[in-house]
Image (cartoon, one colour):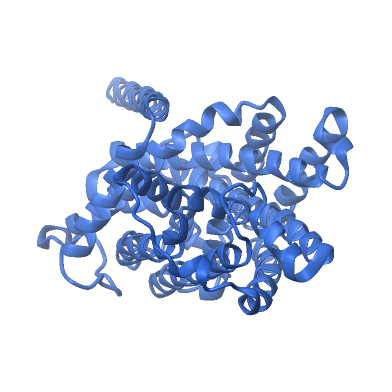
Length: 440
């Protein structure tokens, strides 16, 4: 029987994490953050990076206990049982598919700047189907090939940002950064919610653990490295954009506009191309992580075994890859992803809070006999998990009514799916027991 191939190293896992956090938003959001908190923005990036690190440390600790595919689903299953875990896994897969669709739609929009025809009709459909098919094909062919693509696209997205930061630091006007005007609590909370979502995506690092060479040691390394790296990159990018442009807030494409100031039109074009590469790389990571979550749910019997099938030659969850890709492209073509995006706030709350609480639960002596010991332990005792839970609740506090209703609706759908599957298992077991008793 075929098994998943272990081929991912610590830097592959790190690339997956960086690739998921740094998507297309980094090229657009700096002006939105500046519109809320102005020159406080770089400090906001650092503070939110530190707060996100608290959540990542919880993921790192529980991730160091397991070597199976599934990430947050596996962690919460061990801590709280199958129902809570199913809700976490379902919400993760659901948001990955919707996010993949939204990123694909964004790629079409970005390409439309250079080739307007691809934003409508069959050319748009051809682009979306072509990109999705190519990424699905790579994922089916092998985890090593998938890692190569993710690694290459991660480097491809970081190079324009590195050039932007490296050259831009020499063109900063310090006075645009040093004045710190008073800001309101409402401005802080709005900016914080934006920043929470900008730093999201690192939670997928542990999902392909069943294909990592040494996941119990490499997943913690990749999680911490991811947060420190993206915090540095995004803070520096914000500093350059804010220090170069006299008024950052009105700019719809802040990084490209700032690059045009000191690198000319060629620099703006480079950043624009970088955004396309960035979104494509993010999409490649969505295919990898989304399909592995679907595989994990099926592997534990929560979904039909069809989704847990491993390709006999390539040793990848081929059915899960194809199904996730088909759902994502259908959402992108129909535009439904925009309506489903409201689920992401509650999905993030469920995942972050679930794993943070699991960190405390699995530290209890009662868990020692059924769960492997952690090879990495978050510092400061219960403080880090408590801070992480508080940050998770902050996501809910900042969510809109529409986001909360959409998220709760998705949770109800997940609960219904779990109940139907559970009743089907119970009925099947009862029929089997009845048949055995009659034969005896």
